Length: 445
Image (tube, rainbow, N blue to C red):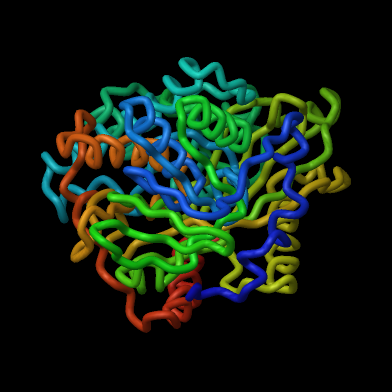
């Protein structure tokens, strides 16, 4: 496979100390693809997009097989921060309207809202226990100048979602359980909730399996070719032929499978630490007692939430090299920022830390649709760090596109439009350093 980071980034090491696998009691023994198999639709990738697509296709009576290089939920879907919220594009509302027009922006925001609602519906319908908490999500102003952004955000939420947000001034943060010297105000959107991301992913996988999907783990797609009107995939111990194909590999994609992917996505590492459980007295000492999922107003944002068992999850973007040393350094910096945000918890141990890839597109919007020049090949990718909801939505949308060609869900043109290529091909990672530096400068303190 042609991937743009060092090999370590695609191995088990970056997630070896993840908290989420410790919360899953019953493990599945998924079959490996051995020998020859055929299906109507093959799905490559066992994260939210692939599992959602597989489930919805199988429920519509389609014969589906899914190839996963590791196990379902191994990638970003099983190691993210568990924020099911609005998002998917890196464009703010004003830029989205300017570039694509108000009607298209409204269509896109309908998709964002529908994505959150879809996850809630799947959790309830499938009976997935995923440790839900948080009523919406809260954005905190990281400097005084950012307080004006809160009011602009509230106007956007009202205009595009009909939602009323609660704005808190700095002096009210402590009484609402948001005490930190880092913040100058807050706004809470009523849309979204927090969950255990791996429990959700495994729940989707089990539901897809029950619906008849053949899930093949430890079966990476190594080669793809056209044979007698079928697409044929070669894995280490088998071959799979399918009339239709959905690629759902996102930040763990290869520039060579299919070749059209080359340069059209940019993986970016996101890094998370989780503390030991803290007592009520420890939480009160800091004055952070809210169980809201939160993020700050930086471009290079931090995201964090107090979980039901009293642990604090804290994440940030960073690390443009996929080596053990680079990961250790960015996790060290994550802890430095944590201590600055929550000084009373400086002595609270970090019990778990890990890293995984989000994926960006040059268009700064997700892509869901047909792969140009490849008959009956489709893809969903590039959710800009908001894949819990948007990845699930992309999967169902792909299922409808593949099955009937007439999706019932909003499918904005900006999502159907193929992403442009980044400059520098397989060396495009060099773009991250100046971009991240510029964003950090914009963020200021």
